Amino acid sequence: MPLAWLGWQLSATLLKDVKPSYEGLFRENQELKKQLRDAVLALPTPRLNEVLNITERFEEDLFDVGNEPGRVSTVTDDKAIIWPSAQCVQSFLSYGKTWTSWIHCAFHHPTFERECAIFLGGGTNSANADDRHPFWLAVFFSFMCATLIFMDEDELIASGASADLSLLHNWYDSALYFLHQGDYLRNHDMRTVQAVAILGIVFTNMGDSKLQSLIWSSAIRIAQSLRMDDDRANLHESAIATQVRRRLWWTLVICEWLPVPYRAPCITAADFNVDIPTIVNDDELDAVAVELNNSPRPVEYHLQMIKISRLIHSFRSSLRQTDGQTRQISNLVLRTDEALAEIIESLPSHLQMHQVPTDEALADEKHSPWIAWQRLNLSLSLLYYRIVINRVLQDQWFQDPETFARTRAICLSSAQGIISLSAQFDPSLARHRPWYLYPTRDQASRPITFT
Image 1 (cartoon, rainbow, N blue to C red):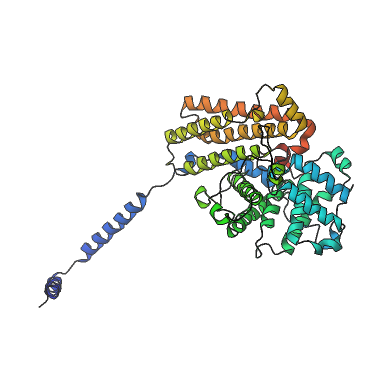
Image 2 (cartoon, one colour):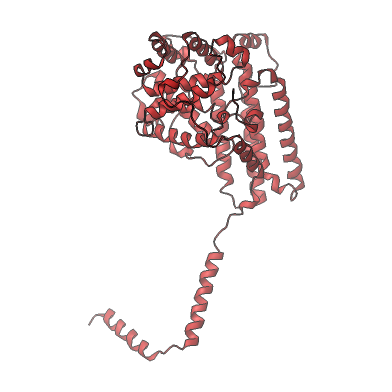
């Protein structure tokens, strides 16, 4: 007879003789409840209140004020589009190459110029829209409105653009219109990603920061479906295509990891395998043979923003993995602040704010006016993110006098630096509207309009 069967018979016989009382069952039930309750209480509970950043809530409130709820598009069909003249497009291409293309890094500028020349050859009007793919037209109008928003009144007049004050709204809505015409969420195309990356300069200024967070996530997913996030999947592409793809991908990552106000990112460093772009100009990429030199290049700004985004993303991820202990958070803040200082120390000489300019440097800036503006933008960005790092300790300031003194001094001096640098460039306030750099005064107060 099997031993298991004998064991079962023995247990059944013993149970017949056991007659538990009501009191015994009640006590056992209460004990089980207590054990379950203790198990729940023993679970780790993150003390998020200790790292709660009330300043980020203030930023959210400011950008909520800037949102334009119920905004109605000014473009619902081709007839509503204000088509720019050939003179205007040529002027914008020249202006954008200097002031905006190094911000979005969405395309190879010489290639885009050639595409525009073909488009202009047919005449820019609504009937000509069928001659180009809607996604290309989305890129075109994204570029036009992103360039327009950087111009002051004199530059706008000199460009030959229409005197219609609703031009920005029209071109912005035209870009979105052609994205929807191409059914971009179903028909994945790299030009969709390019258009969204360029529109990143404009969204907040149009009161569309909520739309930006959603469409930016969609652009990342589209890029992933196109395998733009994996160098190994694109070994067949040309040198130009490789650099364009890498620059564009990192634009998506930079803005996803450095959003203002902060939102949880939809991608992590482990989700992609893309090298940083090469330090080379678009014109150098386009040339058959070129002798490289040590002169400043616009893409170097992009590389510094990649470093900053990596650091801040790592900082925020580590912060949310802490158990809320003051000392643990303080050490993380100190390490990150030191890492940011190392980035500042390693900046190329033409991007260092306090570097005494040489005659050669002054000559470079005269020939390439974007150098001074990159230096300003990067300095403002570094000051802002130094505040972002150190303000995490604001709830611990009164618990630790030493930490209080250090972080308070850093935040105040950085804020004063931002105000001082911004005041120096008030005559060119129109260019204080980049998207992922810092929350500028005009962005934080209301959407910028030309009406």
